[in-house]
Image (cartoon, rainbow, N blue to C red; front, top):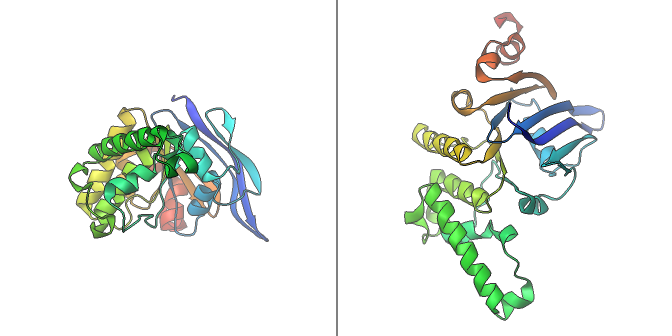
Length: 256
């Protein structure tokens, strides 16, 4: 069993009298790909936002590399080795692809506003480091040829890959992906899936929310199933496919 690098313990979120996420717990291990799935409205996105501190939790804790990170702002987590992408693209269209990815390297540089403004030696060194890291990340996602193009001119599938490059540029331990296959055609999905598996073998871990069950069953080491805010199952793809609670949640009780 993979050593856990993230532990989600009893996460709960209440909106007034509505319990959107109810006492959900699971781990993410080293070099592990974990998928969170469930029917529409199951609470997956709310759970993801709790894990990454976009929403404050009502109860529960999130631990990462032995440190409690519950409620810590997302931008501060990058320095600890945790990054995230969003379902809605966060691309700066008037910047080049390379410049977009360089923004993700902020946790690796030490330049402050003053040294950057006066172009001190430290600022130039940080700029070179960010560029080198960004070029490496773009090479890993197969986008080196696009680095000088404006991000806004890229088709949607390449913009998704750009976001993945920005997510890995700081060399994190764990990457949170919010529906990475959304809006992609079959060929683009295959590229993203292959990238995730390759990065796993290089030492990265992934936690992702996804609706594309074909991809989930193909690449996930472990699947956590949420329904009406509750965790109803956890296991390998083979175990999840045969789980009667999961079948009922997706197809209705009569399917069991």
